[in-house]
Length: 148
Image (cartoon, rainbow, N blue to C red; front, side):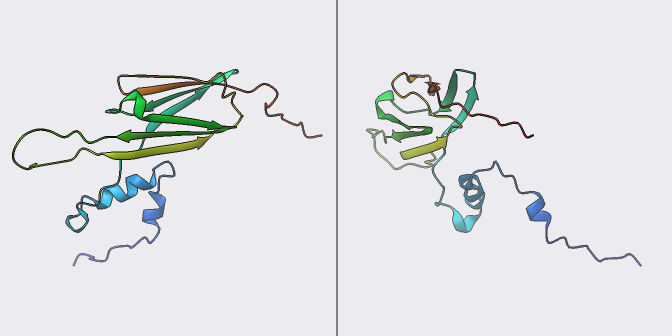
């Protein structure tokens, strides 16, 4: 007779926890369930941030947005990016069979390790990618202290 008992691990879901996964990704998984259809969350602004000795370089994917609808604010070492995706009204008869495109406000805010000089910040937007060049503010570098 074969053993039909299965071992239950109550911590298996915690072990699979990904700390870099956003809350929106967690709720997006629920939208695949029939009871939760129609509650899809807004897509997030995905970005890469890199650093050199003098500056931070940010690349953010914001497709389908006009550059006039993107707002960037800098407050010390906090950077905020928001974008409004406007619904395009199509002339035609009949209703939509399927509508998966998102219209509305997207927002992303992050904190950098060092303050940036907002007067010299540069931004460009091309082919759905926002690029920010943020020079580090002189005199605000982090200091490491040696332990004696």
